[in-house]
Image (tube, rainbow, N blue to C red):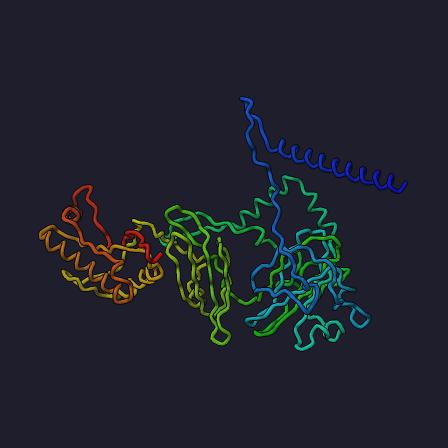
Length: 491
């Protein structure tokens, strides 16, 4: 009997496995059928299956539910969107009691963050929830030093900021129930508000630049200078509490808790509010008349504490950057096929000019790219450079020094009457050689540089332009740098 039952059970398992395999094949064939289309002639052709776009969520590191293993936030840099916090971790650090009622009654689904303050100001916190129906609360603690997490757990240290406000369901329901027309109008207004009109160096209009509406939108909850509430408790439905004053070198912990089980994630940004200068930083390709992304690094230079990376992005598309008054900065931007940009500046100089946009024109390293040397002067009839020629040439020196693979031609021009063509040809060549000599003395390999003066025909055309003849053109610069190609050894 036992043998019969075992045999019967084996048959059932085999039939189940066969059925599952058949269903699997059926699903696969159905999926194949969905991604195959038939054209008018009856032939099968593959059609791209529409894949739903899903945001990439950052996994929360192991242990970040506990105060001992917080996630370190970089100032002004959004962290997220994260996966949803899940559980309270190994230790329940925050538990309200009669003496400390303005805390979480307990941690539900929490994550701990910490931020180090680089300069004096007011700490601001911006939290964007993935789902508005989640009920996030947060507390901010100042690090008191040794055994800080134990002091939090024993309620021996109190939070310096508290936001325990509940979800305003009525307001969210009203938002969800907006008509498509109202939503489209709101989106259009948001898009218009985020658009920036840009002016070129010569004052002409350039394509408007649109900031990312998601990154620029008002957060779900947070802590800001313009808020009026110093604390929000459980029965309140406000969103923002007032920021707190902080000093350089201090460290703060933020514990963020989601009361909603099986909720969704968030994005968090910590910043220090000061009367800063926040221009829009853009990079523009004049040839294609498009804004382009670059590999950008901006360092904040502080002699006492070393350099702090302000921006470090491989694909910086453009956006606002906060510069603190009186600090020195280094900006380095690069992109394949373009000359890199290297600038050192003080924020005070930017603020005095009052520019709301820092626009950098990216120049291509391709063969034939031309750079006119404006405001470069020579002694009359001589090849000696005069005036402030160092400041004119140093910009191009920095450009070319950082790209040893690029070869270039220096060509000089004069306004000639065509009286002594041979003399004028030699003079322009000597002037080009004088510019080359300046670059070589500064450290650029002489083998990268070729020189040229004006040809006989060019001098005749220049003379015709000086004499006012029709269709004759005159070069308005004294010299040009022309890219001639790239050498393999320095690539």
